[in-house]
Image: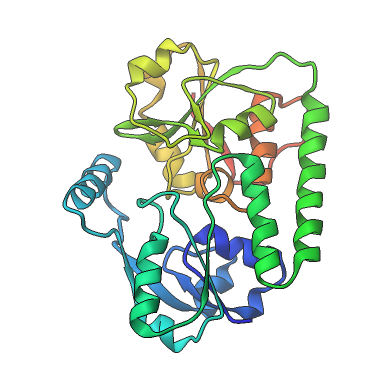
Length: 294
């Protein structure tokens, strides 16, 4: 089966299922594993926002959305040339990836008969279910079941380690300028790691919020995990956050790797968050995944 992934998390799922050799097309943002970027055909492009401030990126996104313009470009000719059997896409967030209706329109125009599977999880359980859906669609349901079982065992180990311990109040900042609170599956990650998510929107879209409203929730810990950034970028942006929370710890985390992409590494994200909330109860996280800012 020839697979095309139109979002980074789907690329990670494909490799976790042992289907890397079947993957022929990816997006410009697919960077895990590194082979996805270097060995596969890029069929979705977008603006390089490196060097832009968070406020400038936010303004650009809002301008594009208000004008009805796309944030991503589908290279339809390149997609057709790959002759895919299955395309993995999403309708979850127009800011994060190309919507599936754009894909359907392009395939109809090109006369391409590939199956399109849209992955749109809003909770941690739904994220795990998407692995099963991809496995079934790609013909490897047993691998998917084994992957999900292994991830659930790791989640159970964290739950056991933090059981009965006081849960710190945790605010997650998904964007710093302007601030956005945690949505979708992120509050589930906090709960699974032994924290109490505050000022959060579990199972719903992340929304803009004021720092005053975040501070009013009285968090003990603030985790900064801006979408689209790894630890260095998150830490740089988190440096502006402590003045808003003088009574809380402030941490940065590698959001792209561990928090905001709904792929298998979310479980590593739970383990990393647990190391922040309960450092004496769980092993230290992998290097370069978290950093205390204040």
